[in-house]
Image (cartoon, rainbow, N blue to C red; front, top):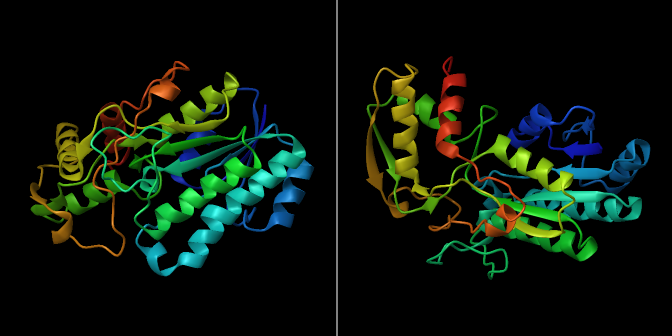
Amino acid sequence: MKVLLTGANGQLGRCFIDRVPTGWEVLATDSDTLDITDLEKVKQTVLAFQPDVIVNAAAYTAVDKAENDREMAKLINEQGPSNLALVAKAANCRLVHVSTDYVFDGQADSPYLESDVTNPLGVYGKTKLDGEIAVTAIQPEAIIIRTAWVFSEYGSNFVKTMLRLAKDHEVLGIVADQRGCPTYAGDIAIAILDLLEVDAEGGIYHFCGDKDVAWNEFAEFIFTSAVEQGVLTHSPKVNAITSEQYPTPAQRPKFSLLNCEKIKAYGITLSLWQERVSAVVKSCSTL
């Protein structure tokens, strides 16, 4: 299997490279080596490499910054996937595109199905939804994976941010009225590989962690794990606060649970995020 990977330096991209099966050939690209917003560059790269599948792990993920950087977010999250889908269709290769829980408004009272009505609250979610729509219109057989609250040993994420803040703060106020399912990027990579190996049907799939938490509960678990492993000497006190007490440029959905029964039908196991957090915390012991 020949895979063209975009966003290779991000959390998912790096985890994907770590888990590629023996015998697979991967051309790992980032924004410096392949600008997915440049259709001609995408055509040239695909023509030269001739992949069996394109895995798009590239995205504009700065949720708050996107509110004032709409054009760049639109280019990367909508135009880029559209370009990849156009070229994939012309080259007769599969496309896997990664999206987000932020396509929903968080007003549901049960985990979101793939078919549920979308209503993003901010620019990030809107541009990611537009990317989904573009991909589906061009290549219906593409696989789109929506995920949530991604963390890993790589890059910047909530786990690493909490560990850093814990070293200098005795008390932290963490939002308690937003719930979601933390997801380890390495498990997303495995889910993508599994779907490709079984030649899964095209369409949207939800994949996330196996248990839901609020951000404050997530933080408390991180601190407990860090103390148990000797990464922290003690846990800071976590004060539960509301979203209104921690205003941000972009509004977040307060309910981000995803129904993952569709992907589980392929025998794919959800991200056991508590186990993964412990491993990531251990890897971050030098922070």
